[in-house]
Image 1 (tube, rainbow, N blue to C red):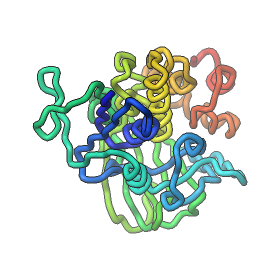
Image 2: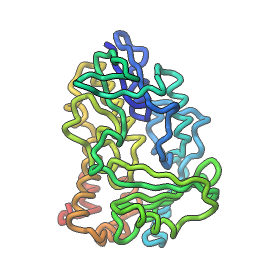
Image 3: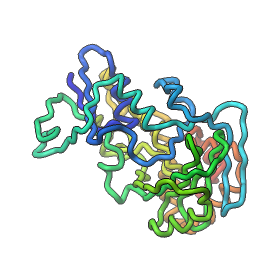
Image 4: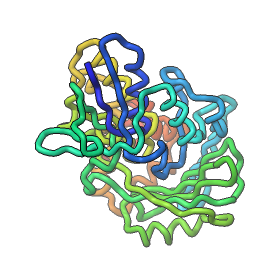
Length: 331
């Protein structure tokens, strides 16, 4: 079977990796850009992915061992641990090293015309085409804006900081970089408002400014047909914006479904990933409808056990955890 994967991001490349070397599968990844990892990103990766996908040592900037959470610029939680909670990775290098092991065609733009796919104006010969095109193939109404400054501000390499604000359904962040820090913000607001809010925590000399939209809808049910994966499928945690890890996990589920000839929709809906992604999206939807000022969410953030907040943030929660955090009235 000839499989064409469109997009050389975390989802597309990891899917190709999981299918690599298997008999009867010829997998090619097509990427319109000249190299991977160009989309703006804070480069955070929660631990666990290394169990299914190798992370080159040279792509690891640091191990995350400390989460700090602020509300209206006041420190609420300072979660420290001796074990790693995740990594700050050099995402372009991580993807480049992964691509070197695969058949990836860069500078290869794929378009659909009259139910056929063309790559650089030539017919794309494939038995199956899988879209791993991120937010670019998602309706704008399902996404939110995010902006980020690359600065020379030095922060402890093991620390990541999250800033929540009254009146903003979203958050700001400070993540370490190889040299300096990434300082950004995303949420349900206009770019001008986001820029004004992030000024409060902006430090150091600005080396670069960029932005992107992030899928914030939850799983797009009509795309559970085995032809979409990663952010194009909606695999981004709506409250935190985390997308690298859930996108890779979605690719593992799709690869296993293809290899074992199982129904992807059924397999994906059985996964913890599906359930936790949708709960993040439900909480966002309910907050927009019932709590536009984010008053209730702020109280939940401040009054709960920080370890429980962390579990929810990274998608490692169950029904009991939801009840403890949000109560029956909010859920």
